[in-house]
Length: 363
Image (cartoon, rainbow, N blue to C red; front, side):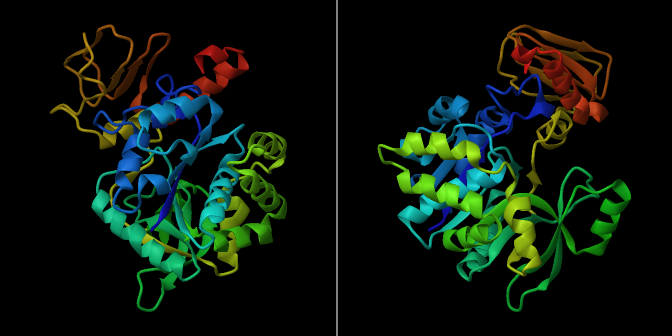
C-alpha cells in the first residue's frame, strides 16, 4: 500500500490578506465546502492509503492547526520542519523516515493546497504511477494542458512506454513565455508539472545520494534518530545545514537527464489555487458569475448589479458591493483588498512591500 506524504508549507502570498504566514492557504476552506484544502487532500487519498501511512510535513508554527484539522492522523505522522528548507528537504525527510519503517515502500508526494474536481480519475492516474514506481522509475503525475499557461512549469515527454500509459520525461521546463507556452500545447509532448511524485523510497534516496550527497547524509542522520530521545537535538543541529533547494532542481531534473523519470498524463480537473482569480474560475458562481466564499457567515454579503466578482468576507461585518464587475474583494479583520481580477497575480507585490516596510504583522 502507498505511503502518502503531504508537504504543507508556504504562505500563499497571492491569496493575501486571507492567507498569512501564520495561517496559510492550505488551512483555509477554499474547496467550495467546509473542508480545508489540507483536509480535502487527505480525503482524496483515502482510496490509496490509510491514516497510519499518511504523513504531513509542516512548519513548527502550523503543527497545532494541522493536528486539529487531521484528528484521524497519528501524532507521530506529523513531521515538523524547524525552518523552511524548500521541498527537497521536506520530501527527503519523509522518505528517509518511511524507509526506516519499510525500506522498499512506495511513497507519493502530493501538495496540501491543490484542488481536483475528478478525484476518481486522479486516483486511477496515481495507481498507474505506482505501477511505474514499483518497477524502479521515479514517477510524476503530469497534467494534460487545457490552455497555454505561463504560470506553470512543464514536462517535456517522449513516447509512451510499450504496453503502459507512461511517458519518459526528457526534460523539466521552467515557466515559459506566452508564445513558448502556446508551442508547448501545440506539440502534444508537454504536460504541466504539478509536482506530484511517486517512487520507491530506496530508489529516490539512492538518486538523492548521487546528486545531493550532503542533503542525503543529513536526512539519513535525522531519520536514524527519529522517535528516539535524541531526535530533537539531531534535528536542531542537522536541519539548518541542509541545502535549501526544490526537489525538481535537486533530484528530478538530473534524474530525467539520466533516463530515470517517467510520467503518467492525467486529466482530472487539477488546479493549484494560486490566486483569487483562479478561485473565481473553479468554485461555484451565481448566475452573474459572482463567487462568494463563506456565505454562511453573518451578516454576509450584499451584491447589487455586479458580475464576475470574487468576494471573501472574513471580518464578521457586512460586505456590500454595487455596480462593478471583474473585481476581487477580500475583507479580513485587519486588512481589506480590492483589485481587478486580471491583477490577481500582483497581490504578492503588496506582501513584498509590507515586508520592506517592516509591517510583518500584516504578513
